[in-house]
Image 1 (cartoon, rainbow, N blue to C red):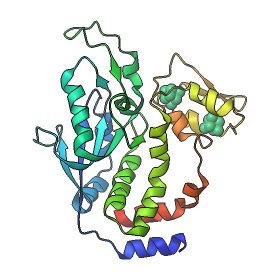
Image 2 (image 1 turned 120 degrees about the vertical axis):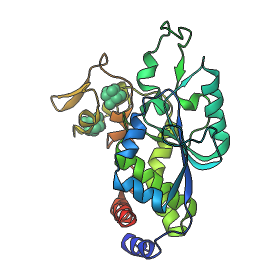
Image 3 (image 1 turned 90 degrees about the vertical axis):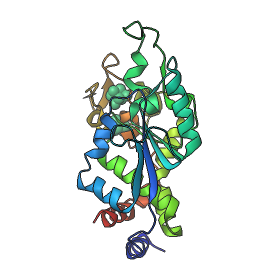
Image 4 (image 1 turned 135 degrees about the horizontal axis):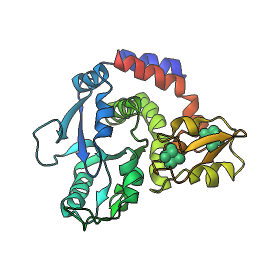
Length: 268
Ligand code: SF4
Ligand code: SF4
């Protein structure tokens, strides 16, 4: 079945009958990822009305203990000297069907990679690691912060993956695959990834997407190629994730139109 037909069929079968459950697990993060989720405005209400119940989010709801849930959106890295954080991430893994590293800190450590401890009133807190150092992570949403659209799309696609029919599952799987691949790739990120895995491999085509994605302007285009200022880099991983030569997958990109139409239809 071609993409257009799949999308039409999928739209006809909306709206959906059963929601998924989603939780926001806040570790050593800044809440910027949650703010980005909220920046979907009406889109967030649409998701909460029709597709997902937010069952855990200490910033927004008075549920004190992590419940069973379909999707855990984990924000922030884990401080190894903070016993409750270490227990919390392990509990999130036990209770959630899908664990998402939401944002650069959960996925790669990001700015917390630079922590060295020694500050009052917890000078012993010196080791911060991405969540994949402690648990298996299903997919990454990179970015500091990730865009509202990325978070919205992952929620919708997780819904379709868990509750949809076979065609919906197929489209959702295609959308989520690169983010799952990213989780498999590892939990270290740096602007240097562009040097080692793109430029040095002869893959860079000078499109400038990496420079546009960098939240701290650590990348400038010089003579058509990215130049990385490693002293500015906060190790968020956004540049490699945005680079079209990093894990460009034709199977996924060929479904792009159908996936965009599907998301548009779901959000109407
Ligand atoms: S160069 Fe910029 S986008 Fe790339 S990892 Fe560093 S801070 Fe993030
Ligand atoms: S996004 Fe990738 S292909 Fe484009 S300029 Fe940066 S490294 Fe090169």
